[in-house]
Length: 266
Image 1 (cartoon, rainbow, N blue to C red):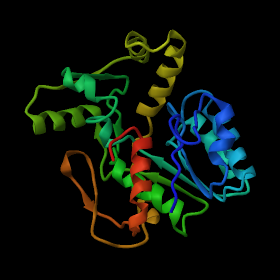
Image 2 (cartoon, one colour):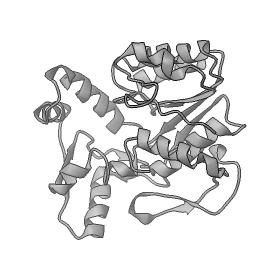
Image 3 (spheres, rainbow, N blue to C red):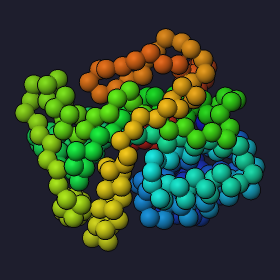
């Protein structure tokens, strides 16, 4: 299959902040994977996703797969924008990524010994991004996923204190989780270099993400109809057997791109 990268460096380029690039990026495309940057719960994501999805359908795109989020008002707007169109669609709504701890936004604070978040003792079923990529690739390339909304979770709930504690035990380092307020978190975002105008949005968006209902999704297996050997990965090396979609070799590049779109290594 031919895979087109939707990025500012792509050919043609695509930039969420430059609407003039949107139409050209979806022209001649059969299936498209949509992931809003910086986050789907960010203010304005719904309008942007709606515009790009409409352009895609008008350009002849037959299938859209949206990376969404659980229990987010702005994410619901994005989902509604896609599902209301005359197109094959699938929604993928994962929990927080395991890789946030070793490749993403939590890595640098942990290197410094302290992870401070406005999450209290909330628990989240962290999921490995490899599992998200498996589902996204299947939704893009296989039959049987049209019209489905998949909430993806790891095999167990972890509080941030438990997760940081597990990493501390595995690494032999002294690491701490410190609960802070939403305002303290938003101030820290600005102190780290973000524009002051994003302070309120950052505080509200991350508070909603970090205080989701504590639950494991019961739909993981519906996304994986073919039983094979791999395992569903969780924090701390705890895993369980699960079903996984068969993947043709020519989908390897597509899967790598999905992982890269999540801000992670392939």
